[in-house]
Length: 197
Image (cartoon, rainbow, N blue to C red; front, side):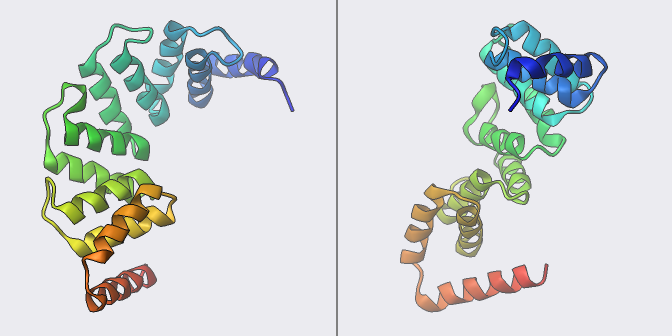
């Protein structure tokens, strides 16, 4: 297996030639100090180059740099801008983070239930387990959105299938308060929806 030091020169050449994926990977190496000294200024430079070409992972990483003031002046507005750009570009992790931002008012953002539901749903549709769990829990509790036990059952089940441990506990609490006939109806309708896709 090649040593990380051996991979850096060709990665740098590809990045300098404008390859967005190489720019993103090189930016991460500088941010993490893998094979090179930690250099957030260099990380930001390469991540910005990749983000400028629409690389969503780089946009999300730039959001983190701006949120924490790493290599740049801490700027929550810029962090929000990059996070939402990554979410708009279809990055499920960014969509989930954007939903949480709107849910809890992170990054000096106004809480917005409609935006929260939108972004959790977008991420959940991409099988993002944390988003599926969050939606399921919100549907089960009726917090910031109408309570919907069937939607909660569906999202929590999907979250479990995608590896969410917290969803198991939440689903157990939900099913404990449902009668057997209702639960069976939920299961059958969910199986029917899956079969029709």
